[in-house]
Length: 427
Image 1 (cartoon, one colour):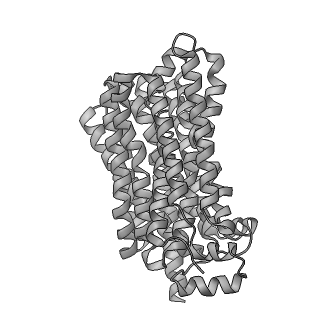
Image 2 (cartoon, rainbow, N blue to C red):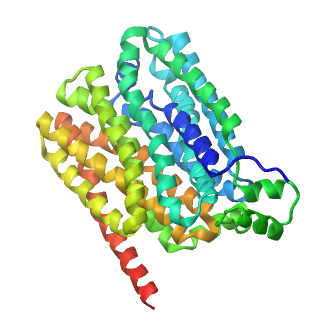
Image 3 (cartoon, rainbow, N blue to C red):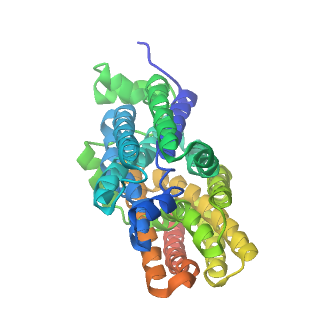
C-alpha cells in the first residue's frame, strides 16, 4: 500500500503554506497610514482595520485546528488558503476601483469584510501545528514545531521590510496585485507538496482505526487522534492546562501579530520616521521574533517548556517596561528587540507543551491555544488605539503598558503549571 510523503515533506508543506498564508495579511499595517488619510479614519478605526485579519485568523483556528484530528491537515489548510485568496482579491478590486480619490468612509465596512477573509491565511497556523505534531515523535516536537512556526512567521517581517519599498516605487494598487498573485502561487505549491500523516492516509484507504494505527506506528508515527472534531475540542477544553497556554499565547503570539500591525504606525506617528524606515524597523522586530522561535524550540526540548516560558516572559516584561516609559528612539528600539526575543522564545515553549499536555487531542488543543491565543492580535491594537485617543501622542508609548500587565499575569500562570507538573511527576 503506497503512502505519500514523509515527516520532512510534511513539515515543508505546512511551513510553506503557513508562510504564504501569513504573508497575505502583511499589507494591512504598512498601508494603514495611506488608508487613514484617504478615508478619514480615527486612530481607533485604524487600529480595528489593522487588527481585523487577526479576528478570522484567530477564531477560525479553533474549528479548523480540531478538524485536523478527523481528516488530517491538508483539506482544512487548503480551504483556509482559498478563502484568503478571495479576501485579498477583494481588497485589490476595491482599491483598483476607488483608490485614492473615490475612497470614502462608506467603503470601510467592505474593506473590513475582505480583511476578515484575508485573515484566514493566519488561521492555517493551528492546522499546521496539528499536522506537524502527527508527523513527528515527541522527542522532536519542539524542534519541528519551532521550524514550522519560526519560518512561517518570517512572512510579516519580510514583507514589512519589502512592502514600503514596493509601495514607494509601484504604488498601493500594484502592491496588492503582487501580493495576491504571490498568495495564489503559494496556495498552488501547498496543494502540490502538502500531505497528511500516515494514519490519516491509511484511514482514507479504508483501513479500520486499529489497523491504521498499527501500520502508522510501524512507520514511526507516535501521536494519534481520539474521536470526532467535537470530541477533540471537548477533550482539550476539559484540560485546565489548555487554558493556561491560551492566556500565554494570547500575550506572546497575539501580541506579536498586534505589534507587527501596530509598529509601522508607532514608528511613523510617534517618532516621525518615514514609511520605509518604519517598515524596516517593524521588519527587524518581526523577523527576530520569528527566527528566534526555532532556537526557542530547541531550548524547550532541552530544558522543558515551562522553564523556558518563565525565562522568556521575564524578558518580555523587561522590554514592555522600557518602551512604555521611553520617549527616546534608541531606547525604544532596544526595548522592541527585547520584546521580540521574549515573545519568540515563549511562542516556541507554548507549543512544546501542547502535545505534552493534551496528547489525545493535539489538533483540538492547538485550535484553542492558537485560535484564542491569536485573538490577541485582534484585541490589542484597538486597545492601544483607544489609549492614543484618550492621551494623545504620548499614548503611542503608554499603550505598551498592556503588555506589562499581561506578562505579569502569564508569569503567575506558568509558575502554577510548572509546580503542578512537578507535583504530579513526584507522585
